[in-house]
Length: 159
Image 1 (cartoon, helix red, strand yellow):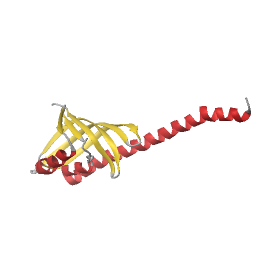
Image 2 (image 1 turned 60 degrees about the vertical axis):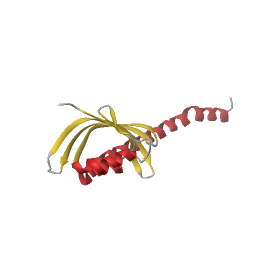
Image 3 (image 1 turned 90 degrees about the vertical axis):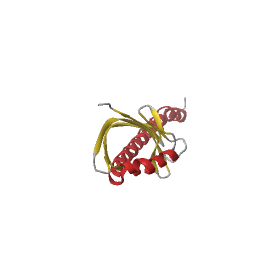
Image 4 (image 1 turned 45 degrees about the vertical axis):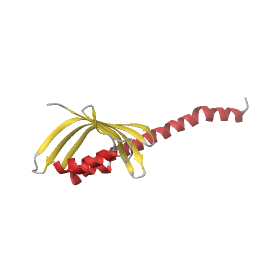
């Protein structure tokens, strides 16, 4: 085997796959960071703006949905927007959401699975709070306006 041929074989079988693996790890790391930042921003914006802040993080896509306690409660983005504006934001004025043990699984450069335990306090117009603890799972997707939630599910611990 000629030296040039040996170099080509070495590069194509060892170096290129190693570089691709490193590139994938860097890519997964940047997705992980971006999705964790989105989760932190959600908590911050809910505390500042109340439940209407959710609309900044629900993907404007007809495939969007939210499930709660095993039932599809918000079947699409249009329904979700009406529910948040017309019902939820009139009952709840502030939300303190705290994520715990966030896990991000990078599925592609533009999509990731987000899951975390959560604690939230929902405050009504009389400033009375209702606490809830549970687990959240969702698909986050990179959009032209930033990372958004495409699908999500909340399950609350029964006390």
